[in-house]
Image 1 (tube, one colour):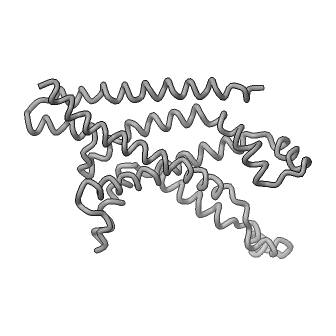
Image 2: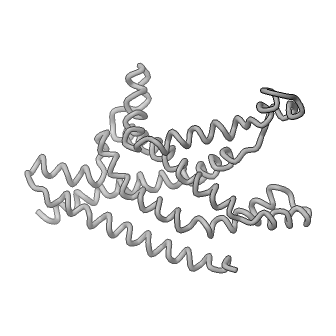
Length: 237
């Protein structure tokens, strides 16, 4: 019985790892784009800066930054489970069921929800890392004749990576555990697999046994992040 449960849980664990990996692949770069959008200083009405009253206030409006920060606020202010339910069920309620009822459709909906959610959380971390780089270093790059792109990739981005590793590692470890929320749309991941034994065989220990898989996975990630932090120690002043 033990080996039967273990092999079955391994299949569910494979789905958990797939959700985790796909979420990271798409949310990490998307989070950086969202962070840059939130920091955007583009002001389409800046020509009104010398006018008075309402027009002068309008000159400081940054539509890209305002819209991006609004999205981040909504995503961070609502539960991931609710977002997952909305993304999976609402299109069908509106008559446009874009997700198929099979495992592939559920996996796609899960990944979309997770990517949007974690991209917003990563964006806040990226933004803190970027703003934490001393302005003087960017100004030094300008004095040397570097373009804005060169300054970002050669100065800001490299130092940002070192600063964001600890908070990023916490979010990524949280992601491992959040994958269990996929069961809410009947996604056959690790926790759902363990729980299925309680309904089919009347035993509950497989559900607790899933904790071993999570602990091992998180343990490997913790070792990996510690190694990355040591590798990036050359940024210390």
